[in-house]
Length: 115
View 1 (cartoon, rainbow, N blue to C red):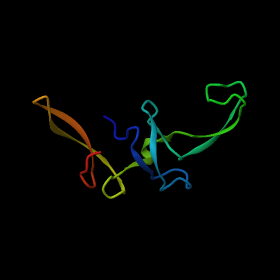
View 2: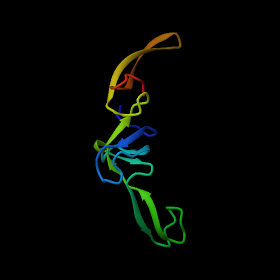
View 3: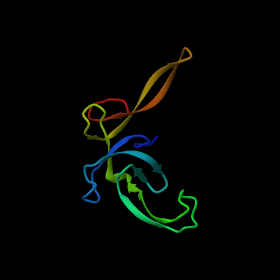
View 4: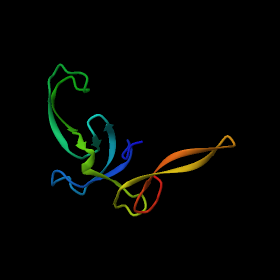
């Protein structure tokens, strides 16, 4: 199980000065590279040739897009206090179809709230 998943709200704790302290939603997690794409964070410009249709533009030009940021440079937002927190894991029992099932759950270390 991962600390940060797609759809989580994170805050940038280190990196470029213009993005430090900003929050955004995780768009994609690149597990092999230990990086995440965060909406509106680490924006870069990319020059696209006119023939490239895989990006959605047929005319080409300059696009602005999010670049990956290392997972160690972001921290998850605590849903209760809205401050950066670490992620912990605990085992909880859940009733499913009349049977008890043990499930691994992520929680915020600051408040103990489920994520």
